[in-house]
Length: 157
Length: 75
Image (cartoon, rainbow over all chains, first blue to last red; front, side, top):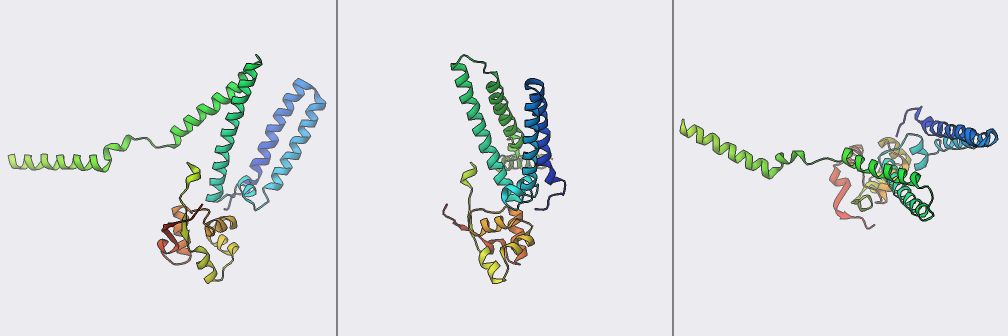
């Protein structure tokens, strides 16, 4: 429940940094007036996120870095659902752009990176089956064989 | 999957009211949010093993007094 004081700043600062990078790209591609509008929207969003972190709701505590175990579970479920929605949207966009004979690499990249990241994370966070030799049945069988061997050696001596 | 989490019945509400504690006071004592206390009491959330032990220790009872694995809450 107790997050450190700095954790309240993570979400707003991340939003402001990300938005500022987008504003810079807008400035390069679309002119300074549009970049200024993007930057103002970014700052408003950043302030909104900061105010949200003060709330004691689940969303506020998650963004404020004070989430307990149930709220972590809420965060994980929301992240998993958001990933599915994002991959679905990328799939639909790819289908539409291919049908329109338009450039579809953006949807392809999002879908591929999301799918590969999901598989990598499953492998990284999941446990493998390397310890099956210590599985109860096999371990008992190994132990029985070892004891039988020992008693045979003792008998031979 | 995540939606098929096993939920158990518990006596948290009874234990809390017997001791005259509010949900906020209990939440502060356990180091969780008030919403989490509400979710456990209403059977919408089963706490982790460490939290279950913390709850039992807080009320000075055993874990199986607090949580009943035989009774699954209807979802």
